[in-house]
Image (tube, rainbow over all chains, first blue to last red; front, side, top):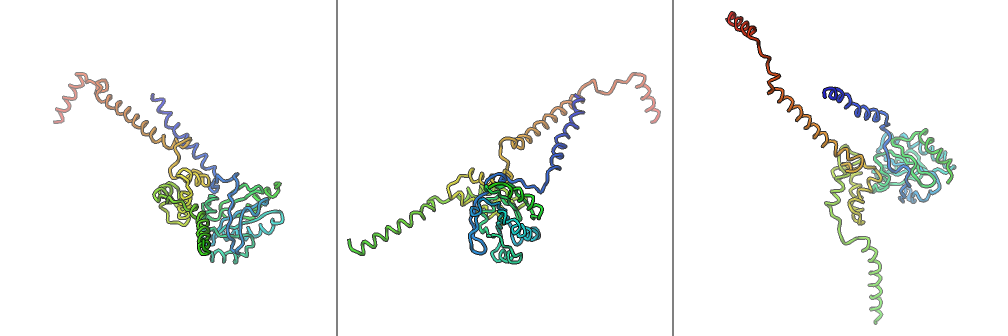
Length: 176
Length: 158
Protein backbone atom coordinates (compact mmCIF):
# COMPACT_ATOMS: atom_id res chain seq x y z
CA UNK A 1 0.00 0.00 0.00
CA UNK A 2 2.62 2.58 1.04
CA UNK A 3 4.81 1.45 -1.85
CA UNK A 4 2.02 2.25 -4.26
CA UNK A 5 1.51 5.69 -2.76
CA UNK A 6 5.20 6.46 -3.03
CA UNK A 7 5.05 5.84 -6.78
CA UNK A 8 1.74 7.52 -7.40
CA UNK A 9 2.96 11.11 -6.91
CA UNK A 10 5.88 11.01 -9.38
CA UNK A 11 3.74 9.00 -11.79
CA UNK A 12 1.03 11.65 -11.77
CA UNK A 13 3.58 14.16 -13.10
CA UNK A 14 4.05 12.15 -16.31
CA UNK A 15 0.84 13.24 -18.10
CA UNK A 16 1.67 16.87 -17.29
CA UNK A 17 5.20 16.45 -18.68
CA UNK A 18 3.86 14.80 -21.83
CA UNK A 19 1.41 17.67 -22.32
CA UNK A 20 4.17 20.26 -21.85
CA UNK A 21 6.52 18.38 -24.18
CA UNK A 22 3.83 18.49 -26.85
CA UNK A 23 2.81 22.08 -26.17
CA UNK A 24 6.30 23.53 -26.41
CA UNK A 25 6.94 21.89 -29.75
CA UNK A 26 3.86 23.38 -31.40
CA UNK A 27 4.34 26.65 -33.24
CA UNK A 28 1.80 29.05 -31.74
CA UNK A 29 1.78 31.06 -34.98
CA UNK A 30 0.28 28.13 -36.86
CA UNK A 31 -3.44 28.66 -36.59
CA UNK A 32 -4.96 25.40 -37.76
CA UNK A 33 -7.54 25.74 -40.49
CA UNK A 34 -9.88 22.88 -41.34
CA UNK A 35 -10.08 24.40 -44.82
CA UNK A 36 -6.57 23.42 -45.93
CA UNK A 37 -6.95 20.65 -48.51
CA UNK A 38 -10.56 21.56 -49.21
CA UNK A 39 -11.97 23.37 -52.27
CA UNK A 40 -11.82 27.14 -51.91
CA UNK A 41 -15.25 28.69 -51.40
CA UNK A 42 -16.39 30.59 -54.48
CA UNK A 43 -17.15 34.29 -54.12
CA UNK A 44 -18.21 37.14 -56.33
CA UNK A 45 -17.56 40.65 -55.11
CA UNK A 46 -17.49 44.08 -56.62
CA UNK A 47 -13.98 45.42 -57.02
CA UNK A 48 -12.86 48.88 -55.93
CA UNK A 49 -12.69 49.84 -59.60
CA UNK A 50 -16.24 48.60 -60.15
CA UNK A 51 -15.30 45.43 -62.00
CA UNK A 52 -16.41 42.02 -60.72
CA UNK A 53 -13.88 40.09 -58.65
CA UNK A 54 -14.45 36.36 -58.38
CA UNK A 55 -12.51 33.22 -57.78
CA UNK A 56 -14.23 31.40 -60.65
CA UNK A 57 -12.80 33.88 -63.17
CA UNK A 58 -9.28 32.62 -62.39
CA UNK A 59 -9.82 28.89 -62.57
CA UNK A 60 -6.68 27.09 -63.67
CA UNK A 61 -4.42 29.70 -62.13
CA UNK A 62 -2.73 29.74 -58.76
CA UNK A 63 -4.68 32.22 -56.65
CA UNK A 64 -3.42 34.01 -53.58
CA UNK A 65 -6.43 35.28 -51.62
CA UNK A 66 -5.32 37.94 -49.18
CA UNK A 67 -7.62 39.33 -46.48
CA UNK A 68 -6.58 42.81 -45.34
CA UNK A 69 -7.81 46.06 -43.89
CA UNK A 70 -6.54 49.61 -43.99
CA UNK A 71 -6.51 49.80 -40.18
CA UNK A 72 -4.32 46.73 -39.93
CA UNK A 73 -1.02 48.42 -39.16
CA UNK A 74 1.78 47.39 -39.46
CA UNK A 75 1.29 43.84 -40.85
CA UNK A 76 -0.91 44.77 -43.84
CA UNK A 77 1.33 47.74 -44.63
CA UNK A 78 4.39 45.47 -44.62
CA UNK A 79 2.90 42.87 -46.93
CA UNK A 80 1.17 45.13 -49.46
CA UNK A 81 4.40 45.84 -51.43
CA UNK A 82 5.33 42.14 -51.18
CA UNK A 83 2.02 41.08 -52.71
CA UNK A 84 2.28 43.68 -55.47
CA UNK A 85 5.83 42.57 -56.24
CA UNK A 86 4.79 38.91 -56.22
CA UNK A 87 1.84 39.53 -58.50
CA UNK A 88 3.97 41.40 -61.01
CA UNK A 89 6.73 38.80 -60.89
CA UNK A 90 4.60 35.67 -61.14
CA UNK A 91 1.57 36.76 -63.18
CA UNK A 92 3.12 35.58 -66.44
CA UNK A 93 3.46 32.10 -64.95
CA UNK A 94 -0.20 31.96 -64.00
CA UNK A 95 -0.51 33.62 -60.60
CA UNK A 96 -3.32 35.92 -59.47
CA UNK A 97 -3.43 37.84 -56.24
CA UNK A 98 -6.89 38.80 -55.01
CA UNK A 99 -7.19 41.27 -52.15
CA UNK A 100 -10.29 41.20 -49.96
CA UNK A 101 -10.73 44.25 -47.75
CA UNK A 102 -12.73 43.36 -44.63
CA UNK A 103 -14.24 45.41 -41.80
CA UNK A 104 -13.25 48.61 -43.51
CA UNK A 105 -14.72 51.72 -45.06
CA UNK A 106 -14.64 52.12 -48.85
CA UNK A 107 -12.73 55.41 -48.61
CA UNK A 108 -10.00 54.06 -46.33
CA UNK A 109 -9.66 50.94 -48.47
CA UNK A 110 -9.44 53.00 -51.64
CA UNK A 111 -6.77 55.21 -50.09
CA UNK A 112 -4.73 52.16 -49.04
CA UNK A 113 -4.79 50.79 -52.60
CA UNK A 114 -3.83 54.16 -54.02
CA UNK A 115 -1.02 54.71 -51.48
CA UNK A 116 0.59 51.37 -52.27
CA UNK A 117 -0.21 51.51 -55.98
CA UNK A 118 -1.80 48.05 -55.90
CA UNK A 119 -2.71 46.77 -59.35
CA UNK A 120 -4.05 43.29 -58.56
CA UNK A 121 -7.83 42.74 -58.21
CA UNK A 122 -9.11 44.09 -54.92
CA UNK A 123 -12.63 44.06 -53.54
CA UNK A 124 -14.52 44.92 -50.37
CA UNK A 125 -16.39 42.29 -48.39
CA UNK A 126 -19.01 44.57 -46.87
CA UNK A 127 -21.07 41.93 -45.03
CA UNK A 128 -18.04 39.85 -44.04
CA UNK A 129 -19.50 36.77 -45.71
CA UNK A 130 -16.42 35.85 -47.68
CA UNK A 131 -14.14 36.26 -44.67
CA UNK A 132 -16.35 34.02 -42.52
CA UNK A 133 -16.61 31.53 -45.38
CA UNK A 134 -12.81 31.34 -45.28
CA UNK A 135 -12.72 31.02 -41.50
CA UNK A 136 -10.77 34.26 -41.13
CA UNK A 137 -9.88 35.28 -37.57
CA UNK A 138 -8.24 38.57 -38.28
CA UNK A 139 -6.09 40.45 -40.76
CA UNK A 140 -3.88 39.76 -42.50
CA UNK A 141 -4.59 36.17 -43.48
CA UNK A 142 -3.60 34.69 -46.80
CA UNK A 143 -4.81 31.57 -48.56
CA UNK A 144 -2.93 29.80 -51.32
CA UNK A 145 -5.26 28.15 -53.83
CA UNK A 146 -3.90 25.70 -56.39
CA UNK A 147 -4.81 25.46 -60.07
CA UNK A 148 -7.57 22.97 -59.28
CA UNK A 149 -9.23 25.39 -56.88
CA UNK A 150 -8.11 23.73 -53.67
CA UNK A 151 -6.83 25.61 -50.61
CA UNK A 152 -3.33 24.29 -50.08
CA UNK A 153 -1.99 26.56 -47.35
CA UNK A 154 -2.94 29.36 -45.04
CA UNK A 155 -0.61 32.02 -43.72
CA UNK A 156 -1.42 34.17 -40.73
CA UNK A 157 0.37 37.49 -40.41
CA UNK A 158 2.28 39.55 -42.92
CA UNK A 159 3.39 37.71 -46.05
CA UNK A 160 7.09 38.10 -46.78
CA UNK A 161 8.89 37.48 -50.06
CA UNK A 162 10.14 34.17 -48.69
CA UNK A 163 6.71 33.02 -47.54
CA UNK A 164 5.20 33.90 -50.90
CA UNK A 165 7.94 32.11 -52.80
CA UNK A 166 7.76 29.04 -50.57
CA UNK A 167 4.03 28.56 -51.17
CA UNK A 168 3.66 29.83 -54.72
CA UNK A 169 6.60 28.22 -56.56
CA UNK A 170 5.51 24.56 -55.99
CA UNK A 171 1.89 25.37 -56.88
CA UNK A 172 2.94 27.09 -60.11
CA UNK A 173 4.93 23.99 -61.05
CA UNK A 174 1.86 21.77 -60.77
CA UNK A 175 -0.06 20.98 -63.96
CA UNK A 176 -3.43 22.62 -64.35
CA UNK B 1 -63.83 41.72 -72.81
CA UNK B 2 -63.09 45.39 -73.21
CA UNK B 3 -59.70 46.67 -74.16
CA UNK B 4 -59.25 48.23 -70.72
CA UNK B 5 -60.24 44.96 -69.12
CA UNK B 6 -57.68 43.06 -71.19
CA UNK B 7 -54.96 45.50 -70.24
CA UNK B 8 -55.91 45.26 -66.58
CA UNK B 9 -55.96 41.47 -66.80
CA UNK B 10 -52.49 41.24 -68.31
CA UNK B 11 -51.22 43.78 -65.82
CA UNK B 12 -52.55 41.69 -62.95
CA UNK B 13 -50.92 38.60 -64.47
CA UNK B 14 -47.61 40.43 -64.82
CA UNK B 15 -47.76 41.56 -61.20
CA UNK B 16 -48.48 37.99 -60.09
CA UNK B 17 -45.61 36.59 -62.13
CA UNK B 18 -43.21 39.20 -60.83
CA UNK B 19 -44.35 38.76 -57.25
CA UNK B 20 -44.03 34.97 -57.23
CA UNK B 21 -40.22 34.75 -57.00
CA UNK B 22 -40.12 37.56 -54.48
CA UNK B 23 -42.61 35.71 -52.28
CA UNK B 24 -40.58 32.53 -52.63
CA UNK B 25 -37.45 34.29 -51.39
CA UNK B 26 -39.18 35.55 -48.27
CA UNK B 27 -40.59 32.58 -46.35
CA UNK B 28 -43.77 33.33 -44.45
CA UNK B 29 -42.37 31.99 -41.18
CA UNK B 30 -40.16 34.58 -39.50
CA UNK B 31 -37.08 33.24 -37.73
CA UNK B 32 -37.01 32.97 -33.99
CA UNK B 33 -34.76 35.65 -32.57
CA UNK B 34 -34.18 33.53 -29.47
CA UNK B 35 -32.98 30.63 -31.60
CA UNK B 36 -30.51 32.95 -33.35
CA UNK B 37 -29.36 34.22 -29.93
CA UNK B 38 -28.96 30.66 -28.60
CA UNK B 39 -26.74 29.73 -31.53
CA UNK B 40 -24.68 32.91 -31.32
CA UNK B 41 -24.16 32.41 -27.58
CA UNK B 42 -22.58 29.02 -28.26
CA UNK B 43 -20.12 30.37 -30.83
CA UNK B 44 -16.79 31.85 -29.83
CA UNK B 45 -16.18 35.40 -31.00
CA UNK B 46 -13.01 34.93 -33.02
CA UNK B 47 -11.56 38.38 -32.40
CA UNK B 48 -12.32 38.51 -28.67
CA UNK B 49 -11.04 37.06 -25.43
CA UNK B 50 -13.55 34.66 -23.96
CA UNK B 51 -16.67 36.24 -25.42
CA UNK B 52 -19.46 34.62 -27.38
CA UNK B 53 -20.67 35.94 -30.73
CA UNK B 54 -23.89 36.94 -28.96
CA UNK B 55 -22.07 39.05 -26.35
CA UNK B 56 -19.41 40.72 -28.47
CA UNK B 57 -19.88 44.23 -29.84
CA UNK B 58 -17.22 43.65 -32.53
CA UNK B 59 -18.00 44.06 -36.20
CA UNK B 60 -17.04 40.49 -36.99
CA UNK B 61 -19.42 39.14 -34.33
CA UNK B 62 -22.25 41.26 -35.66
CA UNK B 63 -21.55 39.94 -39.16
CA UNK B 64 -21.64 36.42 -37.76
CA UNK B 65 -24.95 37.08 -36.00
CA UNK B 66 -26.39 38.32 -39.27
CA UNK B 67 -25.11 35.20 -41.03
CA UNK B 68 -26.76 32.99 -38.38
CA UNK B 69 -30.09 34.75 -38.99
CA UNK B 70 -29.66 34.47 -42.74
CA UNK B 71 -29.01 30.72 -42.60
CA UNK B 72 -31.97 30.18 -40.26
CA UNK B 73 -34.12 32.19 -42.67
CA UNK B 74 -32.93 29.90 -45.47
CA UNK B 75 -34.42 27.01 -43.51
CA UNK B 76 -31.37 25.53 -41.78
CA UNK B 77 -31.71 24.11 -38.29
CA UNK B 78 -29.48 24.82 -35.30
CA UNK B 79 -27.17 21.87 -35.94
CA UNK B 80 -26.63 22.85 -39.58
CA UNK B 81 -25.84 26.45 -38.70
CA UNK B 82 -23.34 25.38 -36.01
CA UNK B 83 -21.78 22.89 -38.43
CA UNK B 84 -21.28 25.67 -40.98
CA UNK B 85 -19.05 27.50 -38.50
CA UNK B 86 -17.29 24.33 -37.27
CA UNK B 87 -16.42 23.43 -40.89
CA UNK B 88 -14.63 26.75 -41.29
CA UNK B 89 -13.11 27.42 -37.88
CA UNK B 90 -12.87 23.93 -36.40
CA UNK B 91 -14.45 22.85 -33.12
CA UNK B 92 -12.49 25.66 -31.51
CA UNK B 93 -15.39 27.95 -32.42
CA UNK B 94 -17.72 26.08 -30.05
CA UNK B 95 -17.53 27.55 -26.55
CA UNK B 96 -18.43 24.15 -25.10
CA UNK B 97 -16.65 21.14 -26.61
CA UNK B 98 -18.87 18.47 -28.09
CA UNK B 99 -19.65 15.49 -25.87
CA UNK B 100 -18.17 12.82 -28.08
CA UNK B 101 -14.87 11.13 -28.88
CA UNK B 102 -11.74 12.48 -27.22
CA UNK B 103 -13.69 15.48 -25.94
CA UNK B 104 -15.60 13.16 -23.60
CA UNK B 105 -12.49 13.23 -21.40
CA UNK B 106 -13.13 16.90 -20.69
CA UNK B 107 -16.60 16.08 -19.43
CA UNK B 108 -15.77 12.82 -17.65
CA UNK B 109 -12.41 13.63 -16.00
CA UNK B 110 -13.74 16.23 -13.52
CA UNK B 111 -16.35 13.75 -12.30
CA UNK B 112 -13.72 11.00 -12.03
CA UNK B 113 -11.41 13.39 -10.15
CA UNK B 114 -14.16 14.27 -7.64
CA UNK B 115 -15.05 10.60 -7.10
CA UNK B 116 -11.41 9.58 -6.64
CA UNK B 117 -10.85 12.54 -4.29
CA UNK B 118 -13.85 11.62 -2.16
CA UNK B 119 -12.60 8.04 -2.07
CA UNK B 120 -9.18 9.12 -0.83
CA UNK B 121 -10.74 11.38 1.83
CA UNK B 122 -13.00 8.53 3.01
CA UNK B 123 -10.05 6.15 3.15
CA UNK B 124 -7.87 8.57 5.14
CA UNK B 125 -10.70 9.50 7.50
CA UNK B 126 -11.28 5.84 8.24
CA UNK B 127 -7.60 5.24 8.87
CA UNK B 128 -7.25 8.27 11.20
CA UNK B 129 -10.37 7.55 13.24
CA UNK B 130 -9.47 3.88 13.58
CA UNK B 131 -5.98 4.90 14.75
CA UNK B 132 -7.32 7.18 17.50
CA UNK B 133 -9.75 4.70 18.99
CA UNK B 134 -7.49 1.67 18.77
CA UNK B 135 -6.10 0.65 22.17
CA UNK B 136 -2.99 -0.76 20.48
CA UNK B 137 -1.79 2.72 19.62
CA UNK B 138 -2.73 4.23 22.99
CA UNK B 139 0.06 5.48 25.26
CA UNK B 140 2.20 2.55 26.41
CA UNK B 141 1.46 1.42 29.93
CA UNK B 142 3.99 2.62 32.50
CA UNK B 143 5.62 0.11 34.70
CA UNK B 144 5.07 0.66 38.44
CA UNK B 145 8.68 1.67 39.04
CA UNK B 146 8.53 4.51 36.52
CA UNK B 147 5.15 5.64 37.85
CA UNK B 148 6.63 5.77 41.34
CA UNK B 149 9.58 7.83 40.12
CA UNK B 150 7.40 10.40 38.35
CA UNK B 151 5.23 10.75 41.45
CA UNK B 152 8.30 11.34 43.56
CA UNK B 153 9.81 13.94 41.26
CA UNK B 154 6.57 15.87 40.91
CA UNK B 155 6.18 15.96 44.67
CA UNK B 156 9.74 17.17 45.10
CA UNK B 157 9.17 20.09 42.72
CA UNK B 158 6.14 21.18 44.67
